[in-house]
Image (cartoon, rainbow, N blue to C red; front, side, top):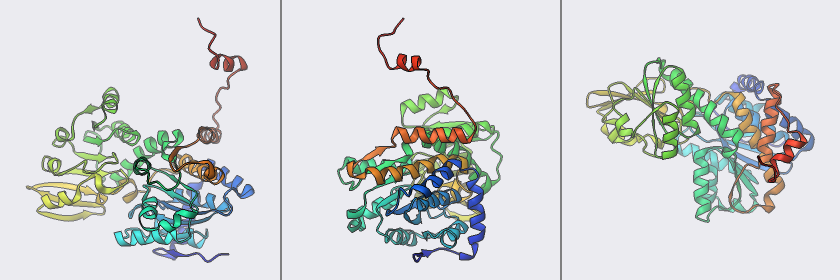
Length: 420
């Protein structure tokens, strides 16, 4: 067995981590089925995969699947507060995966871990936020020669990668796993919707019913958060820059207004936009006493924390993951240092929804290994056949059957000469 390199917090947590990984596997039947096939066919044999992802129990089951397919795998964290240290220990001690992540790591350590994960000289990269791609293009260009392609898990990363492709600097093809229907319809909406509120409630223990919650952004994540908050009795306001999404939010029954109008009304603010400075000094100064602000977008730039700090007379931690800022005699509470609250204060998405996302990751890694030579240096969508395969496997795991077209129906839908 090859020597496994690592930097983790506590190897003694490995057994606890393994138990939690296997618990998550119960709700990941599609990923398990793919792993069983991969063990027989070894479609990733000879590949080296560097993954920069949230190091959770669900991610561990993805990594097990990639390794079962024949790949050598290294993992680093895609967010300083998203690592589960017991999972990291189990990946090293029980599953033989190169692992570089420690919960709460500082900026310097975070990037050192990315470089260490890249030292396996990957042939495929797997990102949640495109940090690995960014480091390769800026600091580790010697690796590009052997990289055949990559995958990207999240909206923020896809935005960055499409900007790179548009500027003609993207050096290898990437499949945007985030854009799969079986990813964003479910992971972004139902996963983010539930886990974001889970993180907020664990951090604060507040009652949502009757409160005014401001959701910044009405993409699939924002839809999910707004839907779940409304379901728990909150009065939801949505802020948007896209007129079509704003109309949709209004027709879904939410109040829609600019953030400056929402700022004095909100009891709780949740940003899910992928943009920076969504909450800024002009908003903080208008907030009511006791307002709570949080983020569930990938990077903590959605809340302008330096400006929040500059406006404040004092800053202190009042409970885990809750900091109090005093602004003109009013208290504003920041959750989880503005990082992904669902992973900072909770455990991230439920395994059953990550099952589809990581099934897509597994199959797209296989697709990249088989098709990289015919792909250009662009960002590609997930092939429809992979998306449909994941949906079909998920339905089968839920014991749900659906209709099948008859030959006559198929002919009708594919012809043009039958009308009224």
